[in-house]
Length: 590
Image 1 (cartoon, helix red, strand yellow):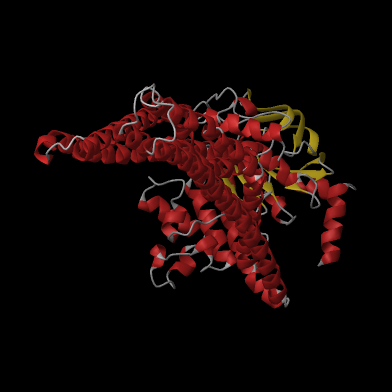
Image 2: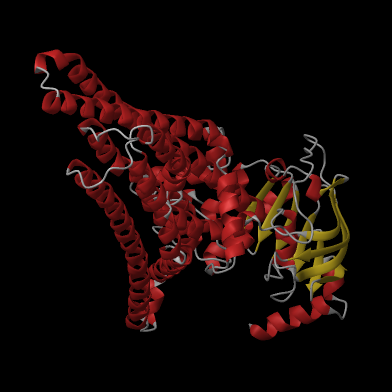
């Protein structure tokens, strides 16, 4: 990672602390108070030792000092506890904000963009990497301020008593951050490579786990196990590099701090022996000044030690921030959606018009267009064509998942200007592989219509032929279906998706090859339910089942991203064109 990129990431990390700035300031203030209490504690302890050893004061006369010392210990412990709690709250606020930003960004970019990475990689980014920035806000940022302020406060306390001890601390202090920078130069890059390796390992493991049956079927399980072992070994090596960097940093810290404290101790030792006669402003060195300086010397370096320890947290945060920053900086090309957040007019008939519409991927590759069409209220359109013709791209553009150029209006309002959350409430969608959360059957059907009545749910299940197999399940509609409907057949899962769509009142029903991958019986059940439902609102069906398209008002034939034919089934089948060729091709296949 180059220096400019690292600086940019550090700047971005600091900007994210804005919502927690008051907690950050409170943490810094508590740290300063803790530093003042350390000086007070050292002052009281040195005073007690001077009185007992040199001045021969009776212990009974020092009860006030002893009481104050105990109080300082207790208050300092309480302050440190509160400071740790405040730091945790600070980190929690920032983590929640960044996680919310990431989830909102993924929702904005849509599922097409999300599919570019394995699910395991996204889990690592959203969970692991965001969690790994906690210490940067909870500890490192406050410690940067304290590492400068507390040593200055301690020097202010030491210099009036002995300028030589203060000078030794002042000269040796910069050595620690200097060597820490030299040692930790590659820490951010090592952490970044560690996160990349973890994301790859997570994605690979999850994908292989999901496809375990397929791998076994084709005798690839042993090969994939070896690949995972290799990825695990790579991750182990990089993790050990991170730990080696952390331990090396600790050694450097302890070495230079110990050398500095030893020099102060040697100076006072020779001063007490009468060998050195400078540093005490011309008066004899007292036990009080020597003990105070020696007690405060480790505390002088402690903030710098802590900063060095938390420097690893900074490197970890910078490594984690790279993928987060890249994700949040991702823009939708060539036309962003949801800019003006206009709302649909309730109960208004739906008219969709496209003029010179060009649909693009998030990498700015044209997928379809230019397209010109008008979709009228309650019209039923069947989209047909070879795979890759642009049918699903058109549906994804209507869902707001793909950017576009040209014009795509809904009741006269440009789609990109609509509030996407409000627009999607007007839609129902059934795809080839709809997602079913690991819940009960009834929860999946009610997913988008939680307030629907029991009677409406029963009608939707009846129309989608879900009731045919529910009676054979031990728990009925309360049966847990498992992750992605693992406990159901493909046809049963698809019928649940159809029932979910039927239960959700909508203005536009989008069907993306809902019968693909189904057996003949399940296919008939699903298409019968959807054909009946298609008459209740505007419907756009993508299908390879040309016979099913016969019942629709119009058929649009797409080829190479363009609508090249429009008309009824009877008209297109009798015309020598693309649709006629598709019919011939299907007959030959059969």
